[in-house]
Image (cartoon, rainbow, N blue to C red):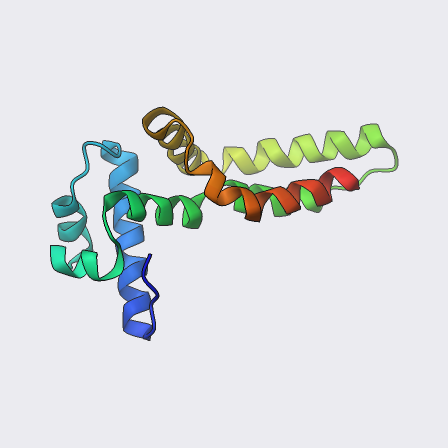
Amino acid sequence: MSSATTPKGASSQQAILQAAYRLFLDQGYHATSMRDISRACGLTIGGLYTHFSGKEEIFTGVLAAYDPFFQILPEMAEASGDSIDALLHDIARRMVAALGSQREALNLLFIEIVEFQGRHFEDLFPEVFPRVVSLVQR
């Protein structure tokens, strides 16, 4: 993803990611074209390429912006309990509640798994793994 050096550039990138997120959920990755994304966000196709090198880079940006782990892990980190059993029960309860409110984002993960065989998870690993380790250490 090219850097957004101006507020307008950042705003355009955000509009692209939001439009692509909706389209990927509604149509799937392969059924969504750059033209579809262009129309949905109100930019020209050239405008898309100003911010992203292609559709897969847009998907990677969508995954980073909307991955449910980024919402679920903070919830799980807030868990408490007087024993390991109580702590694990609270973690599980919080995880299920957070997943229940993130159903659309879970669909995004299914797209990643089915259409990309999970290859973008490696890009998210450096950000997600330390949070998981911190939770496990507790």
